[in-house]
Length: 439
Image 1 (cartoon, rainbow, N blue to C red):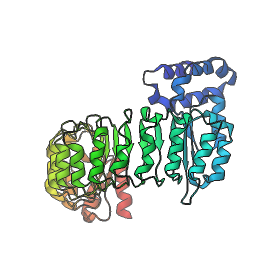
Image 2 (cartoon, rainbow, N blue to C red):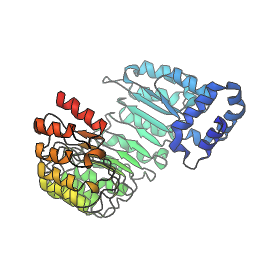
Image 3 (tube, one colour):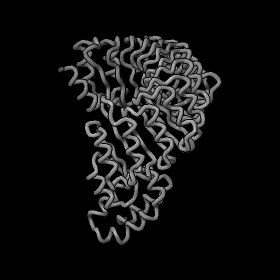
């Protein structure tokens, strides 16, 4: 297949956006291999796809020189620019806003430092830029913009069609989200990130009109149980919800889980929320909840909670499960191992839990319930050489391409040697364990 045909196939594929990296590589190769042929036969194909290309970022760069080179290959606003914090004071924003290369961007990410700049004045500079006009993704982290900066973004016609907005660490509080409630962009916004902004339930309520919202990250805000209740009108439409370190506790998780449709939720992150068994039982009882990834690290979940989660339908499609630094003992581990099969589970991080040999041996004995599991973290658990010898004799070990133990595992020299000399051990796991053992 010629390069032109390859690019045409990528452009016309029903889900071509999933191949965006391959598309960019093909375009760049075609441009550098034969400039004349590219301009004659490939570029016209690209220009036909002006609108869909402008809705996606082909490549995110870290400086404007790269944007300039990319714009020669694809002269459309379909690139991203991410500027690190050491370049983003007010003068840096002013220089950026004056650069004509901004016309080729549809995603812009700027991170400020710990001082007071760029502030709302920096936002005004971006709003006034004659070159920034096709942005659908805007990330202004640590800009110190306050409510005034959010108001400038919401009032500007150039941001009216934003699909992605990140306002993290901007000293907003609840009032800082108020301008979004009446903004035109709320109709099109699909992803909103606002961590570290002192947001409570009142702030969440300003987002209730975001009917297109699919991904919401409000981690490191003091939402509390009332904030969780305020999320209920939104959660039925969300694919991703990140509320790490948000003071939810059991009451907050129950408020989200009970009589709420969680069928769209594919990714749920609730680390560091003092959630215990009662909250997890409520979540497990919601029959609509069946995500692809769950993070429940640094909570207070014990045997009852993990048992309830395992026995229901919540883990039927899960690919990534992180539940480390909790209170899961042997009983909970036995329940997790034997309750059901996990046809999609690839990654299990269950370190820093007090289960020991009984729980680990149950997992080995039921290893066929984990047909896709390749990444397993057992560091800082109570397993000993007994269960490690049992694992060393099992075909389960061959399946584990990435097994992690550490010096906190009291498996002794015999346990380490049994694993490292096992005929079932994979090369990658042997390398990991050898480094740890010798270290």
